Amino acid sequence: MVRIYFFAKIKEELSLNFFDLDIETPCSVSEIRNSLISEFNSHKYLFNIDYSICAVNQELSDDKKCVESNDEVAFFPPVTGG
Amino acid sequence: MSNKTPTENIKISIQESDFSIEKENHFLSNQAPEIGAVVTFTGRVREFSEQPDVTGLFLEHYPGMTEKSLKRIIEQAQQRWDIQRISVIHRIGSLAVEDQIVFVGVSSAHREAAFEAARYIMDYLKTEAPFWKKEITRSGEHWVEAREKDQAARARWGNPD
Image (cartoon, rainbow over all chains, first blue to last red; front, side, top):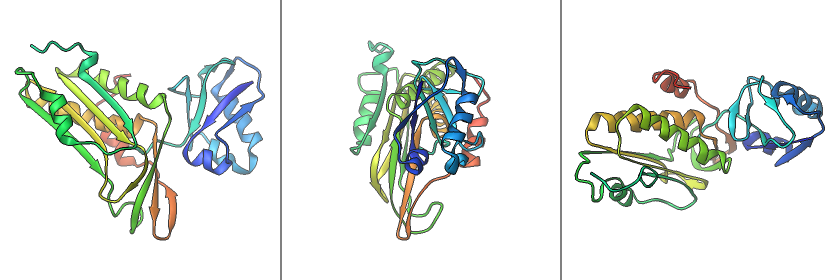
């Protein structure tokens, strides 16, 4: 299991601050992305690679990044601060 | 020379409350005769953005990652330029038009390093630090979309990663 945190529009659209994803670890960010797409099929655009960014242990991570069960994983839209 | 250690030369603050540019100027240059230049940038909530009639903003961030991300951006700037003190403040929560939202201040012996480092920090903050803006307008609210021109501004600096 991996706990996935959501922010901004993703958090709002899903009405979830986080979700405990049932997935075997270690796995890749890409596998997590695909599992989230099937889990939240009606909102699958939120997990499209062009739409959301993944951070693993608070570092921006690409889809090849390997995730362990205790890692902190977050998905969020492109940032818009400043 | 300043007696301050490198950590004391950096200030990062994510806060709901407003900030004082005067206080930041003091932090950036007090008791430092070697500092010859202080460059500061202040971002404000603008009335007209993606849609007209913006009345305010809501700012969300990723606690923990935000601070880490800003620290890394500042460290990259310190590697690139000979700069003395750096202050970065970003407000979160509900803000109104005309409110101050972000501050970046850099001090240095010479103006060139201070100007460039301040711009570098701001360009990276806009494209890497995990903040999200929601605009509140008279006709509703919406999350702000990321902009190509911010990516282009960052790309000017090359890719140090």
